[in-house]
Length: 193
Image (cartoon, rainbow, N blue to C red):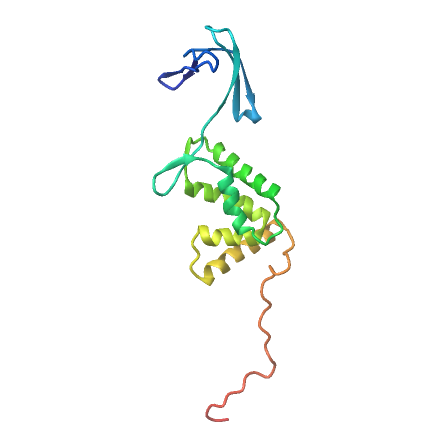
């Protein structure tokens, strides 16, 4: 039986023995695993005397726009970002790390349920650091860019970040050179010429 104390109530969860199916078991030892993301509990069944281990993990749910709630899935994050990274020098390990960063960011909020919009926001930061082109692709779909101006604004913000961080601009990120003006002014075919 697991007892978790809430702010004003106590919830009792019974763990069934996997061997004799007794509805109760006793916790012998508890340890955190995976940097605190899970708890491993060693249990003993008072009826048959056998021991077993349970692993408990807080479920992180994502609430979609339709209102449907589903468990957070790193594979979905990777699949969405993989499309934006198509043809870019990004490997599977980098995608897996990005998905881990996204999950860590969302879990750090402390909320048990997060809207899908928040997952998208959590993707944008790490993706911007990973690959600017993939970031622009993802952001254009996620933020529903509708015009060239939307892209220009985002590219300007990327350039500003580079300059503010003191990072030299990559080829293709330099601002457009000023228009070349010719000496002697312009000639017009208007009256008086």
